[in-house]
Amino acid sequence: MFSLPLASAAPAQPPRVSQAQAFGLSPSELKALGVPAPEATFERLHRPWTWQAGAPLVSRGARAELEARGLQLPELVERHASADGSTKLLLSFAGERVEAVHMPRAVAGGRVTLCISSQVGCAMGCTFCATASMGFHRHLSAGEIVAQVLSVVAELGPRHPSELTLVFMGMGEPLHNLSEVRRAVALLCEPRGLGLSPRRITVSTSGLVPEIRELGLTAPRPLLALSLNATTDEVRRELMPIGRRFPLAELRAALSEYPLRPRERITVEYVLLSGVNDSVEDAARLSEFCDAFRHNVNLIPFNEHSLAPYRAPEERDVDAFARALLARKPTLVTVRRSRGRDVQAACGQLVQS
Ligand code: SF4
Image (cartoon, rainbow, N blue to C red):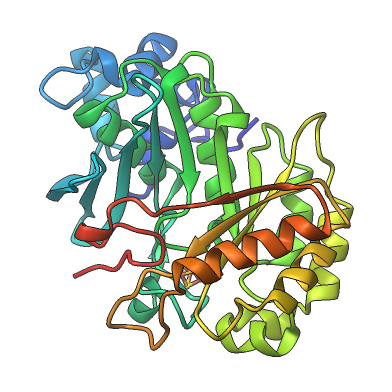
């Protein structure tokens, strides 16, 4: 499926690869690179339950080959446990830091949702988001994204892939880094590795229309979430600069043409900012926007932080908004009570310190 520049007849230096690239290679690519026992090596790399002392147990021969290509796990720099059971992890890839949030589900045994990053920083500049204040540093490679997932699972679980749900909602705009995210998703779904179902992986975008269309053609294809946050172009342009490139009508058209599978829905995320986008008129426009495609709505009361001038809505305003939405049309509406607020791990609070 993947194409790598293969060495020509002349013996060559190992191909140049980026950080953690060994975790970004499929079994057939490991084989093409001459790594001994490629399938068994892939399994040992990608099944964190078999690791020892936080690292995969690969054969000596395979290790030498892989280390020449960058067998590197992120360094766990900081770990902050929240009172609600979630843990924010600060991970370093050669000094560049990203964050991941591990959230055990209290009501579902060993189930865990893991929120991961796709970039260091973010170029999108959403005015309510702490990550935006960092600016854009760089994309993560597929290998780094996969290594991020594996190292957190090795550290904190779960013990089985059927208990793991992944959301690309940490640092970065995953569709700005679509080729590496797509490759990472394929590796995470590889049956000889973690073997995740693509329906247990959600990619959240701020609304990059051409990339949404491209994602629709991807296999394996993760679930799609849209971070909408406004119901008029004027307010969206103010909150999310990407709204200047893609007006709501264009975004809505792309979503209405998105090839949903049976029972699949697009999650529309809506951060409620007091006095900005939380009126009952907004609720009516939100309902109308979503009419064009199968969806569920996730309302996220804003988590206040010092890097944005907005205020959290009152509880009664959140309830009024949800009720106004439901009054328009029966739909699936959830209110996300953010996890990890006390350790700045909640939605929109991830920023490198
Ligand atoms: S909300 Fe998402 S897309 Fe917008 S700046 Fe933050 S990380 Fe980037």
